[in-house]
Image: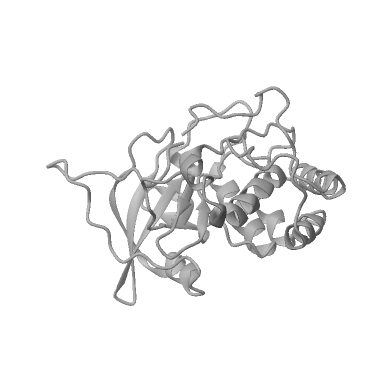
Length: 254
């Protein structure tokens, strides 16, 4: 799955002009995503599944978002259909942990059927994990994403899936391949291996051992149990895990 900042172009090859892009911390983001009228602007290039850049008009305020309909998903042998539901579960887990590292994401009916709609992040698109990790100021956000990916069992954390927003925080996108019952973590974030958790992060990881009730709408009971087990193990371990022989890296890396 390609990062959603690789924007579609118009018939002349020019990148589409985006509507208003909200700060993802705005408390009204979910309301806008849920109730505004959808206009498809274009299909996102390089995405393995159907992924669309859309405009949502809510009270005459145009907002950019990403729409992933279930109908456009390619069947996978190791994940059931409805990957968009995992996008929503990722947002709910991030919010419940108080991390807010996943853009606001909701379920709704769109032009191509039911799917996820996620707030578009206006970011410094020339940046990605490998460039961001070089600066200490980004480490707190990246450590949260690292711990989140272990808890959510993310199988596809590429470098380009870390977006440095223009208002400051770093967000993770493309969480459709998360929450499998079997452990299959694949991520590029290994720079913190062996470092102990800070107090805030340790408390959140411990809390995840009792998965938030909101996740039950989007995940299977066995996936909820596996999440709790990963959280318990990580809480007892107390530090960022190490990769055991490069088996847990995605491809391509960016």
